[in-house]
Image 1 (cartoon, helix red, strand yellow):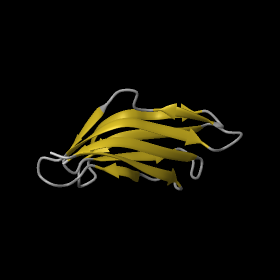
Image 2 (cartoon, rainbow, N blue to C red; image 1 turned 90 degrees about the vertical axis):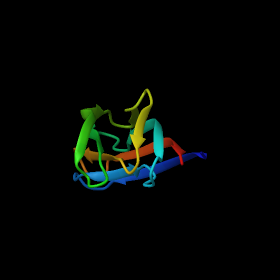
Image 3 (cartoon, rainbow, N blue to C red; image 1 turned 90 degrees about the horizontal axis):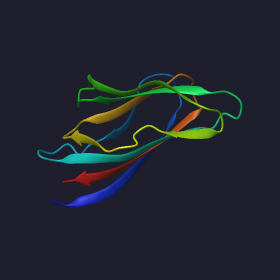
Image 4 (cartoon, helix red, strand yellow; image 1 turned 120 degrees about the horizontal axis):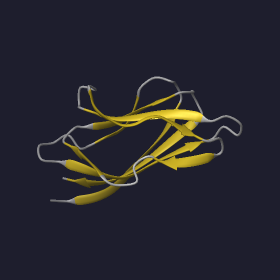
Length: 111
């Protein structure tokens, strides 16, 4: 089995559900999410974020964080411990306000 460190960065440009990361989609593959850092680039207003795990068909499986406020000009770590995603599972998020939040995911992919 190969182990590869990877990351994904996404700007939440809408207040709709957005895919942040998908685990490798081959049999037996998985990903260990090491970090999910959310930065609020708005200098004045707080912004909320909701984060969840979905399957490969985008069906919500588990909410990891619900309407968490991210203060203006700061960042919040949403995954302080590890989360395992199995084959094809995704991390998805929804911002309360468009264009204020940037999300960076760090993972260890096991293929």
